[in-house]
Length: 253
Image 1: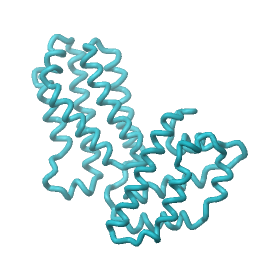
Image 2: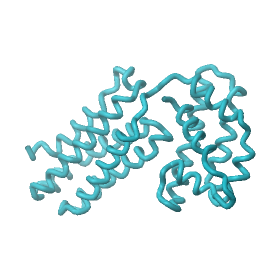
Image 3: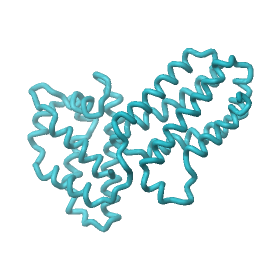
Image 4: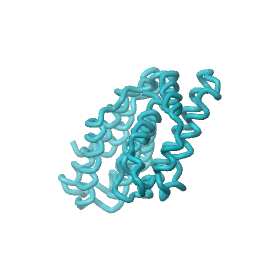
């Protein structure tokens, strides 16, 4: 899987979407990105990520020495319809104006770029998101201090957002979110430790669960990322995340 392959997969869903009269772009993108009904904010965020991925794929193709005229038109066409300004416009007329060679150009681009990562299965992705959502519910219902709740919930939301955009941007944003969480835990370790010191055993164990979910997500990312596997200077994310939160929960064991 590479950037162009992800764009191709999304485009195939786009052109396969019905063009019935009255169907708007927002309905198309909600279907493609698997969003909640009428989630215009979610659609806008997803489109921004998608447009960024299009630019990234173009950059990678140029770095590979591919002449820009060979792929420019295909990417320009799909970027042209991936706009939040079109969300309330009808899809049908735009679909009919898309030339058939856009698909061929994207197929060729997906072939031209090297494989960067294995594909995360739908089941694995759903499991990671489900773990985070379950943890979120438990944290919200706990008696942990507002400081700890707010901190953990912000990290959960950061990682969940990256996972929800996996089909658009791949595993890299998930790794970035995990590394951001690592840094936040390291910076806030003394305050977090103090805040949970007098918490109940049940609430303290939620931090152990937090560590488990983070480690599972990190190990999954490492398993599929071929680029990171080739970088010997990069420490394993699961190791550094575990090391960071370990400072907070060591006293629980």
